[in-house]
Length: 351
Ligand SMILES: NC(=O)C1=CN([C@@H]2O[C@H](COP(=O)(O)OP(=O)(O)OC[C@H]3O[C@@H](n4cnc5c(N)ncnc54)[C@H](O)[C@@H]3O)[C@@H](O)[C@H]2O)C=CC1
Ligand SMILES: CC(C)CC(=O)C(=O)O
Ligand SMILES: [Mg+2]
Image (cartoon, rainbow, N blue to C red; front, side, top):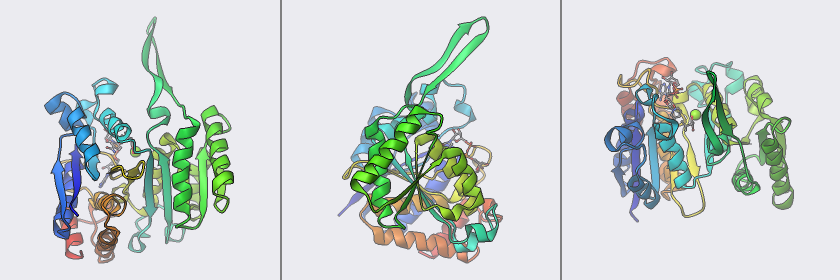
């Protein structure tokens, strides 16, 4: 059956890495129909807003969306609600993709590319389950107010309801069954009420419905430290929007590069998923053709697995990426000399 994939390549290196995923889709020849739309800074330049209603409607009507990255210095002077990043938050909220799966796996051939010693990262396989549509990125009130006399106040609100916590915790507990059965929930219940509620709700759901899951709780600052001390202690890390954002970037370096980590954002069954590399638009290397496309291609693999009904092709794409890395294919971030399209070639050759 035909499936539809909407490509929102966005800004900076977004279009460069998404182009390589598009080549993979074409090579798979699996009846996946792709379309493209403007999004992020590219949307602001053409339409005045980062995400139009029409593009959101297209995203909700597709089987899956593959996003590149958004943002860049050109748009940093805009008010917050007009920035490319606000478009991404609106897309995530509009698609109601509240659970963000961010796997951090260390490929065998990259164990020496990590900033940690080989023995600490060899075989590493962590899955972050990050809450994606709540917390401090979305809470109200927010803004910068003028207090007079040259003083201003910046305000953001971190809030979670029990329902928001339970639905993402359920995703983590369900996924635990297919892994080691262990979930570590990271929050700041020692200093934040929303963190305390997080801890209580996660524990209550586990006790009521998932008694076989081995659940532990860890304060998020300690989690950041433990990730570089002994990362292999973790299997699934369940955490909120802000901590998940930060901890997953940290974990990326354990695997060798931020350019390697994919993600899947999923919501209720039967609704489309949003797939994106965890990295941003990388203005420092944009336009040079040197970005690593692996995170985008591995995000496409996650789309094949979770939204496009082709787990067989997901495995094939992941194997092609691993085989290219095993054969020594390396972009600059991994210490190599290949450009973005060369890396795409190396992966395509092994597909
Ligand atoms: N999902 C998204 O669209 C995200 C967007 N952003 C936006 O991106 C812009 C830049 O943010 P930064 O803090 O610089 O984060 P970033 O993730 O874009 O880049 C951080 C560092 O990692 C490198 N890097 C990232 N992806 C790479 C890849 N595929 N290959 C090789 N190197 C790679 C960059 O060159 C840079 O040195 C900002 O406007 C930010 O808001 C940031 C994170 C996520
Ligand atoms: C809205 C994004 C720019 C936040 C982010 O860095 C991420 O989701 O990884
Ligand atoms: Mg981030």
